[in-house]
Structures are given as C-alpha cells and as structure tokens.
Amino acid sequence: MSFDTIIRGGSVVTATDTYPADVAIAGGKIVAIGADLSSSGVGQNAKVIEASGKLVLPGGIDVHTHLDMPFGGTTSADDFETGTRAAAFGGTTTLIDFAIQYKGQALRQAFDTWMGKAASKAVCDYAFHCIMTDVSGGQLAEMNDLVREGVTSFKLFMAYPGVFMLDDGSIFKALQRTSQNGGLICMHAENGSAIDVIVQQALAEGKKAPKYHALTRPTTAEAEAVSRAIALAEMAGAPIYIVHLSCNDALEKVREARDRGLPVYAETCPQYLYLSIENFDAPGFEGAKYVFTPPLRDKWHQEKLWQGLQRDHLQVVSTDHCPFCFKEQKEMGKDDFTKIPNGGPGVEHRMSLIYSGGVARGRFSANRFVELVSTTPAKLFGLYPRKGTIAVGSDADLVVFDPKRKHTISAKTHHMRVDYSMFEGIEVTGMPDVVLSRGRVVVEGDKFLGKAGQGEFLRRAMYAQVNG
Ligand code: URP
Ligand code: ZN
Ligand code: ZN
Image (cartoon, rainbow, N blue to C red; front, top):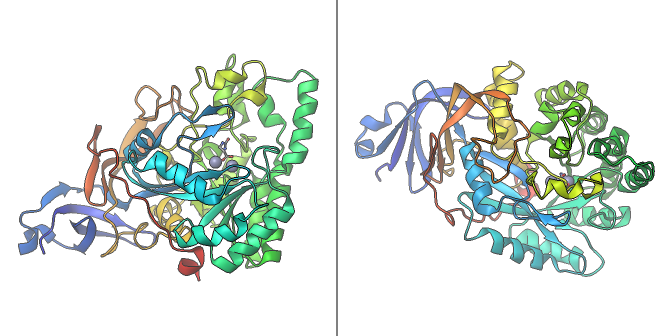
C-alpha cells in the first residue's frame, strides 16, 4: 500500500485528544496516524498538505438542514449542490437532511423523492431523517423498513397545525416503534395549538410585523412541548432528540430529564447563541431575515445555551439551515408575518461560529468543540466511527483548520445561494483552510475543487446499535 495524501505537521484534535501527528490517507480512508509519515517508503509519492500551526479536525456533521425543501409557499433557496458546497467551505462534510412524507404518502415515497433531489447534486456525503406528518396508514410499520434501509431517525412536529403537526397519540405510537426498532425520534417541540391561538389574536389586533413571529411563540410554549415530548418518550421507553432548542426554559426540561438518567438529547443552533429578539429592531421589513422557528429569544438565553453546551446539557450544534432569499421569498410576508417563510441560512458558518464563540472565547476546549459539531452527531445518528473522528479506518473527511485566522461573515463573500446573512458583520476567529471529503480535497482556501454528484448517500446504523 502507498499513501495518496499526507496531512503533515498539524495538531490532530478528536473529541478526546489533541496531539501532533501526520495523517495518511489511501483510498478515501485514514490509513495511518503518526510521526514523520512522509519520510516512510509508503509516503514518498504522496501529495503533502502542510498543516503546521493548524488543527486537523474530523469533518463537521450538520444533522439538521433543509435543502430544496418546499415550505411556506416557496422552496428553500439552496439545493443539494449549492448547500453541500457551502457546507464544505465551512468545514462540514456530512449533512443529514429531511425527506418529507406528506399526508397520505408512504414513507418510501418521501425517501425516493429526496434521493432524487440529492443524488446527482451533492458534493459531500449526506443522509436523511424522515419527517412524518401522517401515521394513519401503514406508516408505522414502514418505519421498520426505512430503518433497515439506513434512514434510522424520524422528525415529528408538535407545531405547525394543519401542515406538519401530529397529535400526542400519533407521536406516542411512533415513539413506541423506535423503542422496538432501534431508531430515534427527533422532535420539533413547540405547543402549536396554543401558538396558533396567540397568532390569530395578534393578527386580529393588527400586529403583522416580523417581530410578532417571535412575540407570538413564547418560551413556555417550547418548554411545555419539550416536557411533554420527554414524558411521551419515557412512557414509550424510547430515546428522544429535541431539535433546535432555543431557550433556557426548554433547556431546564432537558437537563432535569438527563439528571434522571433518561436517554434525552438536544441540539441548539448558532442563531440562538449569537442572535436575539433585538435583531427584530432592524429597519423596515429587515426583521423578516430572522423569522424562523422556534424564534429568537431575549439575549440572556444565549449565555445559558453556551453553558448548556459546556456542561453537556446540550449535546449537538446543528444549523437548521433553511434559507429563503429576502427578495421575493421573505417578502411574501410583507403585510403579514405569518406569510414569511420560516427559516434562515447557516450551514456555512457553524464550525467557525462555534469554534470562535466556544474555544477562542475560552468557554470550552477544542475537544468539546469536535464532540459537539462532529463526534456526537455521528454517534447519535449511526455514522460513527466511519464519520465523526480521526482514526485508522475512518473516512478521510478532514479539515485543516486555522485557529487564528479571522473572518468577517458577509453575504458578499458567502457561498450559500441566499441574498443575506443572519450573521452579517460578525467577526469569527478560526476558519477552515483545506477540506477533504473521503480523501479528496474539495476546498482549498477560496477555491472549490469538488464536483456535483461526488457525495454518497450514507446508510446509517440504528441509534441503538451505536449507543447501546
Ligand atoms: O423555521 C424553521 N426552523 N424552518 C425549518 C423547519 C423547521 O421547523 O425546522
Ligand atoms: Zn423544526
Ligand atoms: Zn428544521
């Protein structure tokens, strides 16, 4: 065997260790980790990527994106090509997106439709959760088939009545299924029925500006739903993963459940760590840029969420990347906040935002950073140890990351196909220099070297296989 590539002289960072080593790649896999690999016989003809002074990280895994998704009367602006490309620029080499089962459909139909959207376009590897909006037919039994095909997690909604929301009985039945088939339910936890009443009352009072999106979705509505979801999962004997947790009230429910030893997990997203309800003070209709669900909260919640990440009350940072352009898409709700498509762009900047706010600010170690953005996502969603770590035999999804490089985020320079940035003007410390997907360099500085269709669909193991 000879090495194809050697990443030389960097500091290898995993969820547990940091140490100086070269990393050698052959056939898309990591085949050796050690000192001075380029001077060995097998390393002499290898391409060398210099990493001295840099960190060598496992590729980021973003377990919550919505590419090419019909929603709110329009379709999210990034498809699987532009979205995975932007992800790669930010050091994220695996995405788990959502295949949506609409009412009356088989789950298989959702899976086939989303495979059709991704297969010829993705530039890095991808997988799917299945969103279930109807379990009145054979869909519960079908969950087992999907799990066997490597779609081992399912997103359910306690919000968006009439669109995605399921009643508690249906949720409970789906949880019972995963307790048997080893899968994992991801929950959008907000009390959709109560929120709907508050929204209708606000509209009747003429409150139609973007900020009312946030003011009609109180933190209590999220905390109540998180608590109910946990109770349903406990009764069903199933694990549960709360998506896009936004506030301290909800965090407290997760913390209490974990203190009781329940298999309860939660993610938050960079927008909840960096932005707040104050963003709705932007002039004119600009507040629409920050309309996503759950909404932005009072600023003090941010530090509580950072603490949650530090103390393992939160286990994952994803993005909930669901981009809609300001022009023409967000503008659909100019006269009524309920018509603004819900979602924001973020897939490109997750790694830098979390490294910057977490490690560079001294809130947690580089190892904890890797755990939050790569290793735990891989473990919970059945990709470990193929993804999520730097080990012999793992895929060579690797990021040469400059921990000192500063960058000011802007829509002028980002790669997402959207006309604004939620994080415009924020300066981060820590940027990817070189990004490899299964051994191929896909990003080098500002050059994109990947190709559409190079990304592979990942059949995932069951939650229960990796997590006991
Ligand atoms: O506003 C959001 N989060 N849009 C995407 C759909 C969802 O609820 O995750
Ligand atoms: Zn959601
Ligand atoms: Zn989402």
